Length: 114
Length: 418
Image 1 (tube, rainbow over the protein chains, first blue to last red):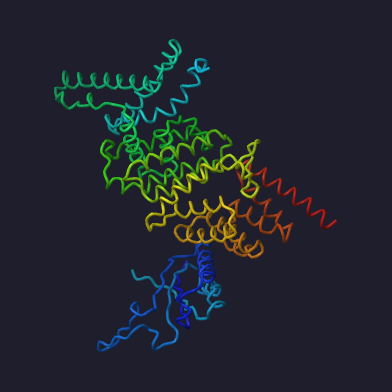
Image 2 (image 1 turned 60 degrees about the vertical axis):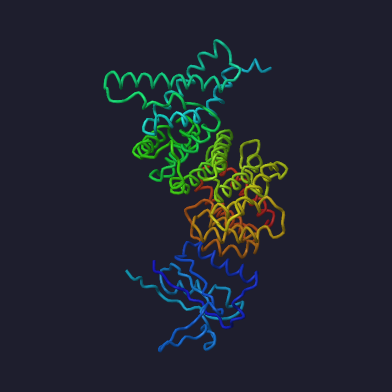
């Protein structure tokens, strides 16, 4: 079994706050992965809102959030267990954000540092 | 009519109730290392009762009588040891035996001793099976035969398990007389897990003896109630687990019919649910939600709570709680139950792919679930799954329940296609 990080990107900051129904669908997706015993890490949400997001750049330049410059922003991640990247991609395809709000999921194999 | 109650009836009942308490109090004085001495004295006391009561009748206050005898026997034992130590070994000073003054069986001491004993017995070094067996023996006064009956195992196996567990107990330097905050914190997870397993052993027991099953459940409740009496152990998790036990217990009568067969949740007669236990469950669940903590016991108690309601969002809420539960801890049973809840919200058809992803071929419940999910859409497939479930299940009552379903489906199938 390998591990893959699924990194969620949303298109619009307005989509960050899901409705209760959207939230339920997202939890169902996560619960479904866990029910298959394929969840390595339930991950975290990364807050994109002012005061919670800054970008540090060369020469001590610090800007607010990532959202002022780029359209898409990372909203969170989880780590799944899968035989290969294709299986991890299949898991990602079932994510409800595609039907709900749009955005994308980057699938990356985890190479453990140890 | 009270006079006609023979000591034969009363003694086993008292034995169950008092043996474990007596051992716990005695252990405070002898230490865990010498638990056998405490157990011997407790057994001797009951032996004496059976002889004495047969001739002289049952005393007015049987429990007090038992404790007086136990106290005297313990004193005799100490006197004997004391003589031995002072006269023969010259090692010990008499004032090492202060027990004479505080050797009492007050309600408070009994309760404290039992609490300490629960923590002593729940040793993380023991595996879950021996842990439950040990708890049943020491904390609940079950005999080896009764434990073997409850587990459907051979008495020899249980004996071996207990021996290993007792060795771990002796090698552990846990102090029964002084239960402190850090000790409680370090073991409370194991304690709650043991009580949870003890309850489940009764609730989902393979044994068909309804009496033993109820006894295991009520013992688990009795022990956890002791935890709620002490501020150090009356935690949010303790209350959540107790709430869970209350909700589950409320259905214990409705789960089994007169023939001893299991009745599925949907088919249970709700009038047979114990309303007062549901109310107690609600009370402890509210107590449990005082903090911000959400443990697996909170989630399971929440699920059990929703099961008692007729709310239109009942299954939606249950599914969400299962989603959270499976994130905390994966188990095949949780995965299967979650999928069942999913089917209740989104329909059997949609749940089929959810179920098939689980790949739990070796679990009879997996095939049972798929049999249920295929029932509206594909009867032959449903029968196939149910038949596979029959092959895999070891429980006779479950086999009967599944076979009845297969029969029903076969009749339905005939009606449709011929």
